[in-house]
Length: 115
Length: 113
Image 1: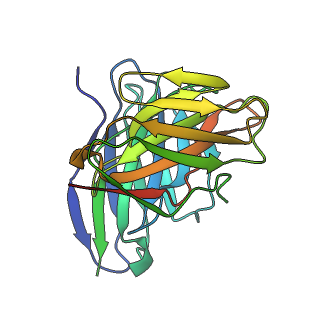
Image 2 (image 1 turned 90 degrees about the horizontal axis):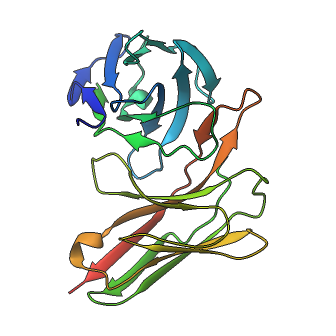
Image 3 (image 1 turned 180 degrees about the vertical axis):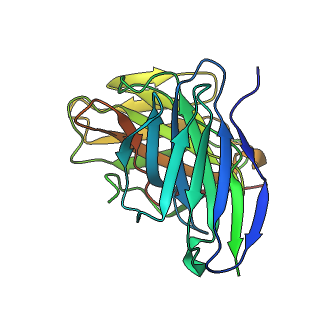
């Protein structure tokens, strides 16, 4: 059983460009959350998707958007990239979005570098 | 804003027991306490979760006092491979009962030979 997978592993973009990151949740999981982790800091919650809709959102601008597909996979899109968007982007999945005890399983992350 | 406070770093030696304490004074009634481990350039890995008293699994124990305002992660007989960042976090349940994790800065554990 594959865990959470993310693609690509690494990505280099320039300022102003747009980027799309992809995530496949663990089998049996239907909720996907995205986090941004800057170097030396803890992951910061971006948003969460359940039943193809955004359920919660952290303190991130509208340049950050997402999508969840019927197969529960998800994409994170970032427009008008800034140097400060350089970070490790983590995807986490959990079996349901309605339980406070859900354990979130993280993927290996996508390392985005903005030049 | 992180809802937890934990030491920035800790040092230990192989074979010792390591206890990392986390403060969460504003924990909500329905919040569980979860600990994750993270190695450089990898995603966090779930270690243990608890609500009250003591929880033990194959890798760690979690002690939670009755007031639930703090918790202690105990790692028995650490090895060099336990060198990592350890995050203590509580959940944040939204109005629609959705659940997100709020990470702090974590505790950097260094295990020496």
